[in-house]
Image (cartoon, rainbow, N blue to C red; front, side, top):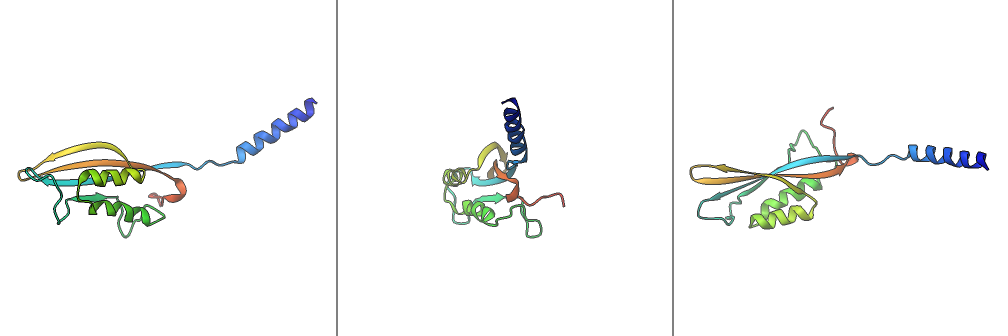
Length: 125
């Protein structure tokens, strides 16, 4: 009986140690929102901009739809609509930094989201 229990315990340990769990990686993007002091709504020129830290030469995400989804937030007419959309995609607000200018004000919002390691292109190649 002890031998059977020892065997079952040993097999359980081997199976558990061979299972690899998906490692999560946190990635950030920055949302820039520019507005005039008297006009809080976004005009047709688009005052929301997303910086996903992605360029044509250094992709970060395996799937390019992540960047396309982020860029879609630039099309919304209000800041709250853009933030609601990004929240639905799983992005979380980390911090808000107001930037004061002479004619325009700017708010920078840092967002983060956790991805599986397999969804990310390593920045350390």
